[in-house]
Amino acid sequence: MLDLRLEEVKKEIAKRNAQTIIVQVPEGLKPRLTEILSELSKTGAEVFAAMDPCFGACDLPLDKMNALNADLLVHFGHAPIHRPQNAMYVPVYDRVPEKTIKTLVTKAAGILKEKKIKKIALCTHSQFIYLLESVGKKFEEKGFEVLVGDASPRIAFKGQVLGCNYTTVTSVADKIDAAVYIGEGHFHPLGLALSVNKPVFFLDTSTQKVQDFSNELDRYKRKRFAAITIAKDCKNFGILVSTKTGQRYKQVALHCKKMLEEAGKNAFLLSMDLVKEDYMAGVKVDCFVNTACTRIVGDDAEHWKKPIINPLEVEIVIGKRAWEDFAFDVLY
Ligand code: SF4
Image (cartoon, rainbow, N blue to C red; front, side):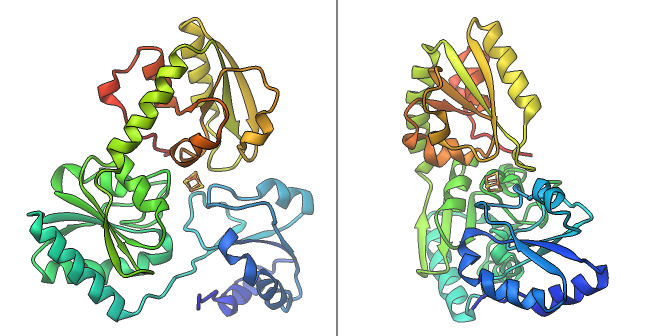
């Protein structure tokens, strides 16, 4: 059972004397939304839920707060990217039994030793961040050197990753033999595999299996090469600019437009909150450039009817970057 820390949240609401609150939860917590709203309403505040889909702390409903004249945002389940005064973040930890951790570390240690791996970078998502210290110690007891990369403005904790940012691993990549992600779901280990040019191992806390993601980067590169090749022959580009708080890269979009126009292409700036393929129906462009969440290209490109590329890939399309220097885009 996930601990939602509602008593702590209620105390903080009282301390701040908040009168109108917006609650934001990730999609996976929506089954518990009414429980959260009922409990927080006991403070006497008016409590609204932000119902638009929320996939990360990159998506704070600040416009909605203005519209509803709210004085506090309570965001559950993600670590901060932005830190506005009128927002509080409530971590939601997924507690993993000690037995599961020991099993996973023992299995992983066997696999890593077989591959002669000695130095690892350890990372996870914010939901499992509390595990890193104890898991790191367990690997050290088994003879591994463990590195946990530093936080940065977009990353709140040491060793934390986001789907769009693996700098806690890439910053130490030249000192490691492999990267190890512990947690649940393929989203983050896959992104890690696309971001770091080292073997990647996923310690899955839900299945208790250890998976090798080391070949994912090659597979991904093949797909991207195909998209880039098509994009080279396109004339009209739609540059997607999200207005979400942590996916808003207007300057990157303007830079892409300039690069494309200098290369003799036409480029149009298309802005929206949620970047969605459905919204593009009827727009007369041949290719899209995504400046929002990098995973729209990383995970979803196949669902787009026209090619969609990331800003670094634009550089390859216009010949400014060599294919050998291909990299997965990072959001800072
Ligand atoms: S930009 Fe995408 S990957 Fe990054 S935090 Fe937001 S939803 Fe997650």
